[in-house]
Amino acid sequence: MLQNILIAIHLVLCVFLIVTILLQESKQQGMSAAISGGSSDSFFSKNKGKTKEAMLSRLTTAMAILFIVNSVLLAFFVK
Image 1 (cartoon, rainbow, N blue to C red):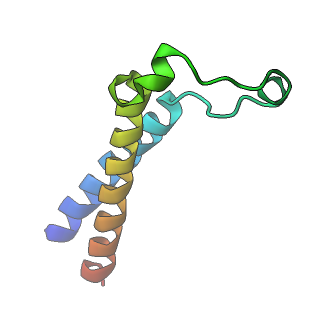
Image 2 (image 1 turned 60 degrees about the horizontal axis):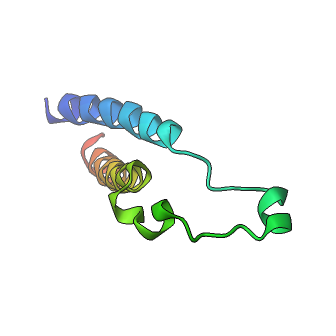
């Protein structure tokens, strides 16, 4: 019974982790940042903790931690 609950939780965590990763914007600016200098003096760079990207980053971190904990629990309970 506990094994089935953990597997269901694991599947839900997998889906949410994939969705949160795919919703994030790319952090790579490529060659354009190397040529232009990639200035970070914008409003959004100064307020990164309050933006959508910061919220998604924290949510992805939380989902990853829950996924790892659930994986360890599944490893102990599955025979």
